[in-house]
Each structure stands twice: as structure tokens, then as C-alpha cells.
Length: 317
Image (cartoon, rainbow, N blue to C red; front, side):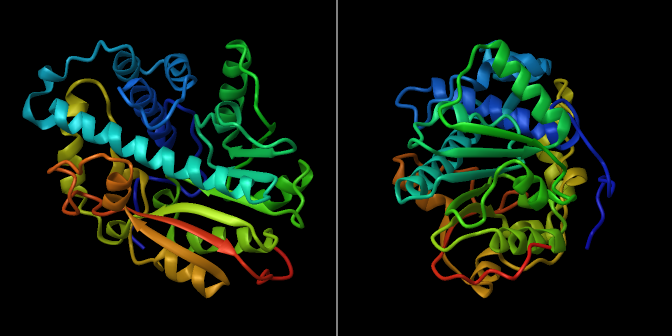
């Protein structure tokens, strides 16, 4: 496995390391929500981004970012492509979670929840519990900020401050999670930040905690296996020149890993993989010419899966 700038026990808040990418995604959700004919509606994204206080993203959500200053490297068309990509991704996970709860799941677990506000912005069926897991600083910040905003959860929200490298299955149980109840699992924008073996362990643990009929939604980036670090850094160089220093190659884990669809099938899940361009077409958005699979991370495959029979190991590792 290729090493990165990450450390085995590193931690972060929403203005550092991996947490900065969560703020970046929230900024894109805010802009996608404000777009004409928006695919998503996240009224909490912009105030959360402002509260984090990263100047670049604050200017982005407030409409004060002059893209013409970036030259051809960050054109309005490329910015729109990025925002559309986050809109499509968010809508995919929204739809998966709501379809699962409509079919009877009454627990939703959002792994590495970041600034995700689904517990507040989606119309959950009565009796739904939404569990949010993330780093302690992330959970504390989001909870206090949404409280100050007067936000009201639309489900029973259970925010759990836990590192996913620790015993998060026990932390779930300690906060009222019931493995015998059907669950919708969301692992959005997470897998590239996990070493290959940790990715497999995550799905093993999810399977051990899942009743038949439970679902998983995640996405798989095949290009993470042989990420071109130089190409990725070159793509973000214009952002660094304007005060946003996110070095993606130092945050992600590269190297050979089992394709998510294959691994889930091997442990008892019925799996559907949907390429990104199919989702763009489904939602009526054209694939931009600079968002083809030759980008630094390549194509994205969105994955939905259901556990149709009890294939769970005896315990979660």
C-alpha cells in the first residue's frame, strides 16, 4: 500500500486535513441547492460552511469568489461541473436512504458524517433514528452550530463522537443501535480515505451489524489504486494560489484494493453499481467534457446493495 501524508492516529476538525474536504463538499452542496432547478435542498450547508470560517469556502457560498481570477484552470464551466457532481452524489445518497426507510428500515447510519445535514433536511418516516459517526471535534462543532441555528432534526438524531479506526460498532450499540432492526448504511465520500484493508473491515463490520433487508450506499473510485499524484496536485494548484491548500494525494490511500462491488457480493449482498455518467443522465445533467475518466481519480461508480439473507458473522470485529 502506498503511504501518504496521513498518520495512523491522525485526527482533524472541519478546517484541517480530511475535515477540509468535508467543508469543501458542504460548500458545493450549498451552491447546488441555490442553482436553478436544484436536485437537492440543503439550507444548512451555507451557514455551516460560514461557521467553519475557511475564507475560500465562505466567499464561495456567498458568491464573492471571482472565478475569472483563476484563469482557464478553474473556469466557470469546471466549477459548475464540480457542483453538479456533488449534487448528483448527494441526491444518490438521499434517494438510497429514503428508499430504504420507505421499505421499512428504521435506522440510518451515516459513517464519517462531516457536515451532512440529512437528519435535519430529509422527511424521515416516524420512528426513524439517524446515527451520525465522526471525529469528536466534527460532531461537537456540527451539533453546537445547528443548535445555535435553531435547527430541528426530522428524525431521532444520535450523534456519536468516535474514530472509525476504533470500536465504532460498540459505540453504536451503546447509543441505542439495534442490530436486529433493518438499517440503511451511508458511506459517502469515505472509502478513498481508508487503507485497503480498512475498507474491507468496514464492510465486514457493517455486515455483522445488519439485519436482512438492510442496505448500503457508497461509491467506489477505481482510479485510487494508481492515483497520479502529480496530476492531482497540478489540478489543485490554482486553488493553492488563491489560499486553499488541499493536497489530496497526501490525504487518501492508494494501492491495490478489492473493488467494492466484488467484496460486497462475496459477503452476501445483492449489489448494483451505477457509473457516474448514468446518474448525470438520470438527473438530466450533461457530463462536462473535462469530467471524463482521465481525471486524477478517474471514474466514480455509485454502489447500492441490499442484504437479502442473514449472512452476518457471529460478531462485528
